[in-house]
Length: 323
Image (cartoon, rainbow, N blue to C red):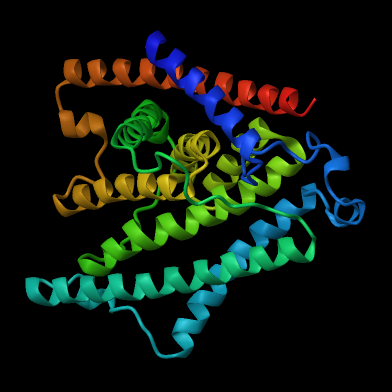
């Protein structure tokens, strides 16, 4: 573990020096308070604004209103979900058709709401003159090792939170099945949610409060919009991993892939009927479960420490590079 951490830190320092030399504008470039104003036109600096506390409330309100607008629009054009009678039918073919129809409606609803939300948030940030540079691709964005490590971290964090999640209120949402369920969870959700929360919201927060605050606040906001207490906790922890990966590797596409891999696993679990069960229920044997839990806890705690240390180091390097 120590050897891998040293290699990551060395790679981090090289990446930062390369970014400084090429003067690329990315999310991980120095924050607005770390930049040298003399390097930019005075008029441009004066026009730029920093995100304020009330901007978070406006963005959250935009997100919530977009869900309502999206639902209203598809209802206005005559798109309706299958009735409960069809969804609960004893005839397998009727029930499966209804579930596929429900998934199609959910896909249209989700796409409409998230598209409206992203467009309005971008428009609001531009209206407020808050500049956010979203970086989609960077060298090594599709490295299997990085994706595998991130995928394992997402599940380790989820396993560690499981005992607490079981104590919190939850809600089972029926999303249907089939092709459109995969499109919603593996394509639409990773694209729109990462673009909004890691791309624009994290970037906007970072311009005012710095790397660590952006990492934590964007994760908390990502969790908050999931609404249900159990989902809020798991989504916040997932946001920490996804946010770190974006800050660390400068690639929103890589984060989208991680999100998609996680959701694809959930879809698979739904297909075999274990999505609503805990890892403890799936494993059944207590000895095996607690072995998995301890292993996941060690990985999660060590990784969390590495994340915080590297993000702090990156900020210090950015500051020293401009002095």
